[in-house]
Amino acid sequence: MSEVVYDRREVRRARYALAAVFAVHGAVTGSFATRVPWIQEHASVGAGQLGLALAFPALGATVAMPLAGSISHRFGARNALRGLIALWTVSLILPSLAPNLPALCLALFTYGATAGMADVVMNALGVEIENRLGQSIMSGLHGMWSAGALVGSAAGTLAAHLGSDARLHHALAAAVLTVLGVTACTWVLDIQPAEDEEPPPRFALPPKSALLIGAVGFCAVFAEGASLDWSAVYLRDRLDSSAGLAAACTTGFTLTMAIARIVGDKVVDRFGSVRTVRVGGVLAALGGLLVVAAGHPAVAMAGFALMGLGIAVVVPLCFAAAGRSGPNPSLAIAGVATITYTSGLVAPSAIGGLAQATSLTVSFALVAVLACGLVAFAGVLRSGDRDRPKLSAEATVAPIPRP
Image (cartoon, rainbow, N blue to C red; front, side, top):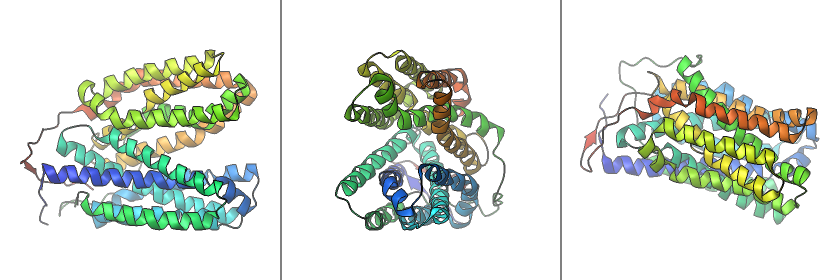
């Protein structure tokens, strides 16, 4: 099989194309999240049943993500991403069509499965581009995901305010996002496996290195999930804030994360992954302590903003380190993604359960303790700082044969 050679300009173009794909992926998530109340009413499910159904996206992703490596190996990275991102955008339509709980669970399982597989291929390509450019880009890519999620949620909020049918809203959103995502895939790197390369197993346990890296990601995503789902409740119930101020706290946390991710690559290039995550862990822990000790909404909001700033780049760096931790980057990335998805699923219910048994203050003390884990275990991300050759503007590089 002949190898494609890319110059630096083409690799940079691939970076921007992949950033657009990340934004599309995030926009699907934002579009779905804002219409969950409509979907709940349409499917005639209660709060408990909805909670059960919302576990199925993570379940679907966990089951399907190990398949991403074999799909990429068989079809090549570009075609695999093109097909998977199209499946993911189209799957946005399914939950709003579900008339009952079983159908909703099946729809959300499919929604999560396509999201997870596309996520693995996207991040594997992101690591590949990092290797070729010799500079950090993963934080910025995930920042584009956050920006896309904000745009999708803003459009969804407007649609909900206008009282539009979510089936129509999601059909239109899916059509637009499918076109954008598939078009952007035209310029991503077309990584093909070597002729003598064995296809990866369809299902395999992640390597130990991915488990350690995933543990770091678990701490960050736990703090993220806790803050996203409980920050508004914390301000309302513990500090007697207004509904508008409580909602603004959540929005501020999301914006802080998005901005920090977009500018985070420059910080990582200067200080390295390990030092960046350790400093981030200190900031996140301090933010958690501010939340716990807050006697005024402004103090708590500052604490949540500090947590967002501290954890923003951790997950992108975990994916980058996983992609360089062994001979099968897709498998390692799938392992890390599975752990982080699990953390995002566990965090909201764990915070709620602990709050019911004790208080929300104790729950966020746990978040602060987990943030300290970022400081303690950041060293496992050292593989993300391995030397990468810098390319001149005219230099060319042959693709590394990996799925």
